[in-house]
Length: 466
Length: 90
Image 1 (cartoon, rainbow over the protein chains, first blue to last red):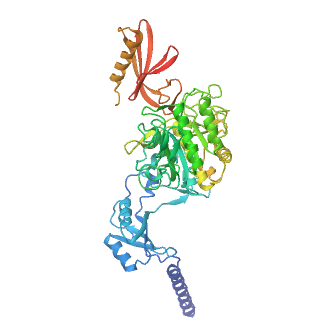
Image 2 (cartoon, helix red, strand yellow; image 1 turned 180 degrees about the vertical axis):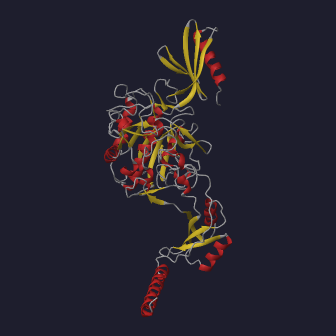
Image 3 (cartoon, chains in turn blue, green; image 1 turned 30 degrees about the vertical axis):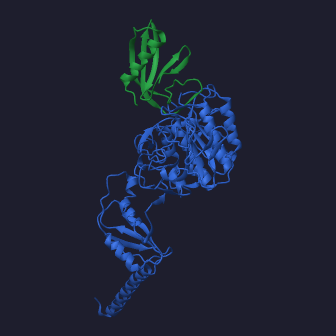
């Protein structure tokens, strides 16, 4: 090296070292002055359990715990250490709210329950992941942590198991807007509902204290705690078949509770009604009695806005039609199964779905490839919309879950989306709601000329997403 | 109580004996099928049924040179389209 160049080189090197050091310090300051006082997480290997890819995104070790106001920091630290966990982060904007990481690999739901039992804890919940939509539309979607959500292709069809990706009702996108509301009551007019099923129990309607017990001029007073049975005229609509329980789960099995399935609504009020017996059949007279009950409850102040009717026959009843018209007058949407005879209902009507009443939506069934189910009725003038109705997993008797198919299963999908819409737009009239649902569909080629709207119900569009 | 296939066949035979008064009944065919609804596609007058695909058995009996179709599942037995109408046996 030329001696004359030595000093300038040394000076340049010194400047570079100073610049590098200063840049490093800035990053340190940025970390220190960040919005959260984040404690660096320790890196450790984590082996995910054998679950689907989507479920795996939930198999993290984090939970959110809010300690009661005034709980000293030392107490929080002591609790967390005792439970072999670690405070990962503190959310400054909400006092007492901590992100906690489970350190000993216990089932995360057990850890959540453990915290919820502590007197110092206001609430604890697992972390729900919200991530960008697969389609890159810029919208969020919400994955529930319900154990069997991966089997609910109707809510999120990723194309596995022979299905077509996207042939679903876009529930996860809709949930970024609303997961339902306990202000909305949906009547499930069916074989009753097992109102003790663990995935339904928190979403079952209970008559509020300020609403008087049901009183019928002929039947007298009926203590309708959870609904009504028109079979024995009691306030006990317990399901002894399973069909009604299945339909109820599609509408509103509790979502995000870590077990079973997610309903279209995570939160809703299901009003169980029984008019079909243990074999799954009932009379028009009992159906009328049950609808009459719903209208009565609406007039008494219960916000029952939808009747889900997964049943029917080819026999027309003017009395049933008149009663459904009364429900329309009362502002109640009537969502009905189009029937399973592979028939064109424009030529061969199916009732009650084919009644020409302003609140009736007749629903056809689709399979996981967006094809009209081979059993489903259709009708360019008389069937209005389609929804998934093949291999649908939902709640069943004896705390179980079962796959079932039929326009029976497609119907509560639509009733459920109607409830989601009302959770966001509670003042929407029945006419507005019906029109809105039919205009919010995804057009499906297989439905062209088969149903009025030409499409499959789309929950995300229905709650306002494009 | 849930019916077995054999019990359903026995009930169908017994019903047919009572209905046509003949004891010489042949079991032509018994098939496992999926019916379109919970009335097994054989709803009676004024009857509404759940629109769920329902597994069951189609039982074809013959007597007096005539054929009779019964439909059954674990909950019920029905006689399909007998003299123009459906009949629920149980």
